[in-house]
Length: 342
Image (cartoon, rainbow, N blue to C red; front, side, top):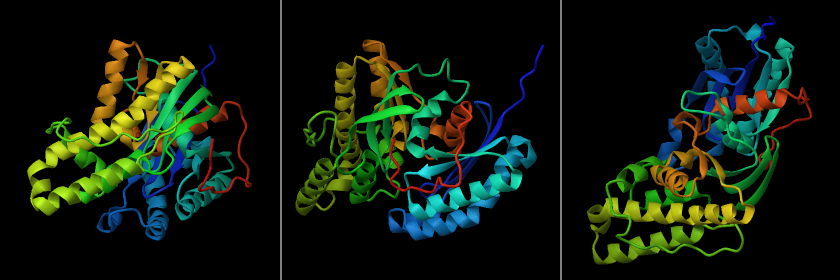
């Protein structure tokens, strides 16, 4: 009986402020290491120049740690997959340059990966909670600090954006609104925790009406800012007295905005298989609503494990592994592209 040879992929992710490396054996993650950049907290957001400098310091230790934790040697690697874009140019250049150099030194192929495909194909990673991988076609929903999209996924590398935010991303709205009420950056996780202790019906914020499957978040953000200023002028302690209810009401509006579009997309495409990805896919409200739809309307919902929701290298390695099955590798003309689309 022929025994298949393990296929080891090194994934490298450096699109924003996290330097990440992962080792996959076929579709199973052996290690998934991330170096966070705490320096951005003092600025309330990512500073691109500081991010790229930190990547240069972090990338060798992170890749080394990933290989060591996986229990393999560099010479056993079959493929290196790196994030080509979208993202911050300086950050992408560090990851792509390192990946190409290492692949050249080891004389193995490399693949340039679309970061957004990574978020949606993370649900194909072999993990204990996964009963079976998603079945095509499905509706992919990417919700993060930089993107909010609804994607028609016909195949692993046949994806079409059918709806997206026309201004702010949902994660950006979480962070900026959280900053208004004094939450630390990134505000999303803290706002979610406080929201679970509040009343989502305490306050009402407008849901923008957009044509088709597109959506907007700038209006909710502005309405929230004006609401806070109005009430603080009357009572300087308004936020302190109502923090949990404010978080719950805001979170309901932010999630309701995208959820209405998901429901519309299901009706228009007649596809009720939903795969969600991105940092905001860890949010308790959006997960609860999707799971509720799975019960009431028999949607098939794929929620990635929490470690694969934020920017991580395991998802990049997974895309690389899937793409490598066609043996169509990248060459040195594949350069960092901060505005890379599907």
